[in-house]
Image (tube, rainbow, N blue to C red; front, side, top):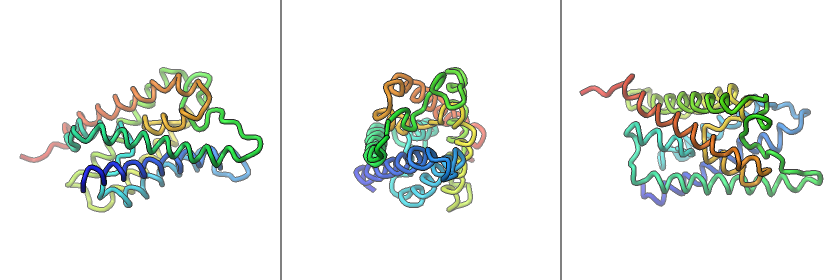
Amino acid sequence: MTLGNKVAAEFFGTFWLVFGGCGSAVLAAAFPELGIGFVGVALAFGLTVLTMAYAIGHVSGCHLNPAVSIGLLVGKRFPANELLPYVIAQLLGAVAGAGVLYLIASGKADFTAGGFASNGFGAHSPGGYSMVSALTAEIVLTFMFLLIILGATDKRAPAGFAPIAIGLGLTLIHLIGIPVDNLSVNPARSTGVAVFADPWALQQLWLFWVAPIVGGALAGVVYPLIAPEKA
């Protein structure tokens, strides 16, 4: 595949992740009578990655996330010269997905953007958790997410099951992290919706870049140590 094919796949894949995952929060979870709650939102995020992994995994690897691309780079699974194009495509896809979601959501008469499924801590945490709590959760949960990705896509792992493991892993991670900070583990996802949310979302965005990148990079270092390639 050419680099153009890959970045196009990353654009549409990240569009789907933000539109599907954040859309379930903005359009469905906002209405208690629909009954999806944060469990439904967690499942929606997992399903976006699972479906896209089967759809575009063979094209771009289905990163959909700068922290994943960086973790794979550190783990020597991804070439450095493709990192910047991937990250740009992921950011553009996330903003586009959030933009279409905003267009739909704003068609409701009493619509206000508010947090717009953004990530936040302190007063903007769903459970009132602190900045330290959010920072810790994002590092640890991104670390575990990348371990799942690195392990499931290892050539020694059972073939064909990686999307299921990764999608279910992301669902579990959301079940843990949504109460803390709405869960990011993905700087592109956080950026896309923050552009359309109240100003506090952009003010707190730094944490949702720093922590996932640190967690992803750590996993890229640790996985080869616990599962070294045979000589």
